[in-house]
Length: 138
Image (cartoon, rainbow, N blue to C red; front, side, top):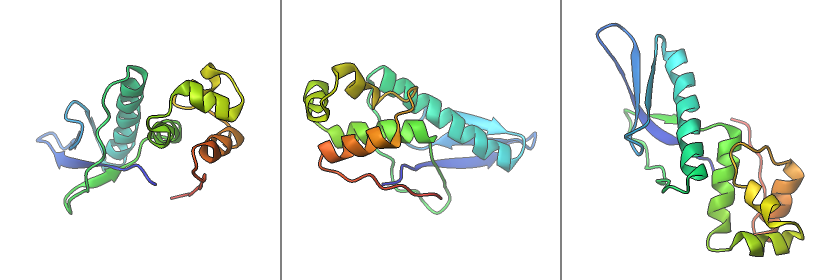
């Protein structure tokens, strides 16, 4: 599953590119070039989603992009944390920790976008959740 949030990009009077996320109205940025705007968009999206994860806030599911939108991906750490949270569903951290034969804190860190879990840890967690870890380069 790839996590992509749709955003609109418009050019303002000064020539800068303004990025606004459709599903996250409080998340926006800009850039002097399209390349800079897209880079900044990924950075601000990652930061906002990480903040929402850290503060246990609701995270909207990305809507399907329209033809006039750009699909923006958060960084890999944030994607991993979001995917682990979605896969865990209603399972508690304690249940996941028992399945992984580890501590509650180690299980919780799998959903911490500030933590870099190893591929081995992600693979073990996916298996414990009845899932399969699949890597992809885009």
